Image: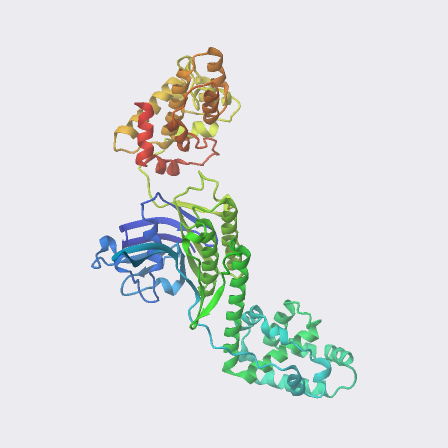
Length: 584
């Protein structure tokens, strides 16, 4: 099941937009859009979901008009249409949703100076409430001596003290999840236990000899009780030192079952409190291991009222990167607590865009680990990462390329020319590689004399462009369309045009013939610029800045097309003005 489309109406900066995304479960879905497009509106839509409706803050209505009715609609590939508005929320029937965003908030305090009031504004990091309501403190009612007495005369010989097992939250989570305790009320189970205990307590000898007798005479009857076997297998799978063999596993399972029966409804309460203690300890250890300012700030979850809260230093006391990675990991831990359904949506709004390399690895490690956890438990998570940094252009994403899904929220006004793409795909063919690199992908002063008709025909390339002079007439027409007309344009043509124009302008500034030749034979536009600079040619800063366009990789495999991300950058007004300046 994929999320086919997401439609937003009247939320923050979006009046109405339909996004055809085809989001994939258990894979990072990276949604790219330029600043100001409305990524935060996307995050706010999901963050405003309540159990039965969308509940927007007044400032988050479109045009800040509360009469504009907000709607979030999801269409799944299974055909279901899920809608949340101010009267309903069918999204929550399918998905648990959690949003991670920037946690800094401006705070204004009015102070007086010389009898005059003035406002002092600071940036605060909002406290993170990990658990809103701490469960009632209920402990497991387990006492080893009492348990041995309850078992019977041989209890002291064969039952181990398993006190430590009752502090393992994950064991009891698995037990509650996988074991059907109602089966133990069946007469067949009760009779089997009663018969087994009587028979075991009739035996004489040492604990080991009695266990040997159980192995031969009783174990098979235990295994025929499916839920009892399931419980014993679970206990055995954890490798506790108190559980040395299969007989210990079944005897320990009996102890756990006895505790549950004696505690009644309090057993579930004790499980809940144990999960809380585990969550608190896990969060404390994780924050401690990643806290870069531990020598100054003891950041840890603390009880406040009836909640578990993490309080942060003032925003100015730690760096943005330190703040972002710590709050991200803490909120990710919180999302784990919140996710109960089989299908979950996790939205991460740009908080990772300014992390350094090490913290980016940390961020991506935690996302990948979370995905693996969900898959292991046969659950589906849709991690949606909102960013303005395109993974195709920046190294800030280290995810395996085959394991990410990149979508573009903004559709650029572009149309790729397939004949240009074919030249890119074939550029490394040995019959044309040196020629196209020299005459098509870079500037050359003698393109009017080149003709590769035979080679182009053999490779079924556009024969009209076998003469590079004619190819660049097409490129120049596309550049004019891009700069001076409000029509669709081919971003790949603009990339060719910018690259060759900058190289041409620099070439014409070089006076020495030998250096001109060396410039032409230097590989790569960036390297050509560096060479020209090394021989004293003044290079305008614009030429380097436009590397975001001309450094786009034009080494593509068949079927690849980077037109959309390139087109998004070319639609930026400043980029367009810079390109206009080199063609003026």
